Image 1 (cartoon, rainbow, N blue to C red):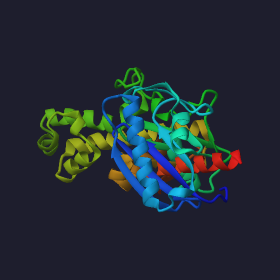
Image 2: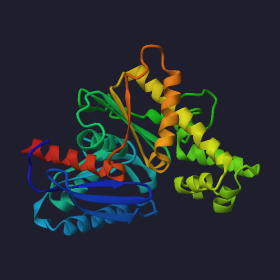
Image 3: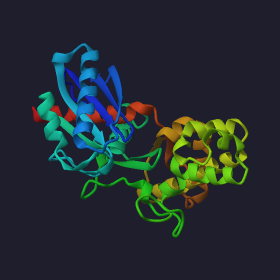
Image 4: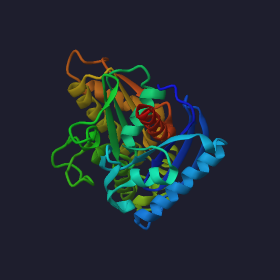
Length: 326
């Protein structure tokens, strides 16, 4: 890690929230600020909200004059070298020069990164993957994203889109995925997949607690609601979550076969909510699908940083980019 002074702000720019965290050069958290992401799908509104959230984090850090760089994680494809967000329709970004605009606003280098790859990098530099050279990160939330570490560095592929583990096709002709394909890992093991399955259980009377909490509204079936339903005794919801964990295990087995990593870190909102039991079921499924000789070769780890993994990774990349520019 570069021995630079000053503060670095890492931003997790998501579809529903903006999380800005100010760190010192040793990655100690100095301040955290949150805001809702504007829903009008206008880039100008999103940039204004992001800018204000970052400014609040800088002010709360008590070191406003020491800003060294800003790292922003964004869902969707990027041109990192040019600081361009290629396409994030929910935020109005299309070939948008976000990096250049933010650098002008804050007067410091600004680095853009894909959100999940930033999360994996955060775990690599300051979390569960510290010291690992060859690893994979899988983050399970509304969808499923991932990142790959080879020789201690993020592997981005020829066009920067490596790590889309959620779109490995595991079940040809299976459940429809938001990407347009069928049977993707994301369509089988994400929170959205669990919610669809659980609501179907609710419609047949096998999940009365879920029905009372969310009815048939998919948007209300957040991880916390699914968890509450299981705690209330909904066997149908438990089956839906267990089924998703088993499919996740199949995906992890594929990653072991393909990449032979020393470790896989699993995080995201679903894993945070359901914890060790969910992970254990995924590991059991993974082990059941591994070819002989590969059992036990990859250590499966829970994210250590949780919600801070993405802003930590973004800040790390900004810190390193600023150092490299000197």
